[in-house]
Length: 99
Image (cartoon, rainbow, N blue to C red; front, top):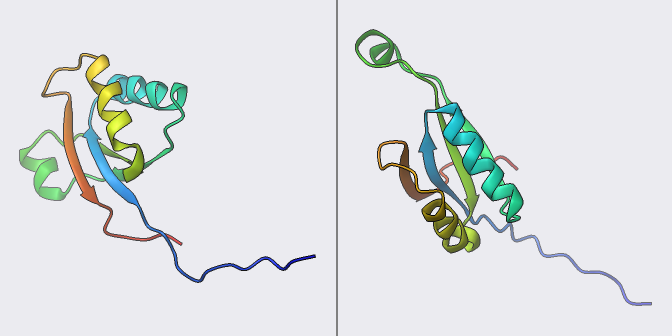
């Protein structure tokens, strides 16, 4: 019987894919991701004091996905026919590692 060997290298391929403020739009995107087996996680951003006083003060949710699934996610988002103002595309590497 052979032994299993594991590497100490951690793979970190997550990207911040898009930012959504409307809960209904977020649910549409989540359902599309789940139906097409795209794993994701959410990062919620609390509005700053400045945004609470002078801006809209709405909660913002960043959906993060694996970078290998970005092309498929782009196709899904295009098929949802969302307006440009409803989703802010980010496509940048996640700055924090949680493991």
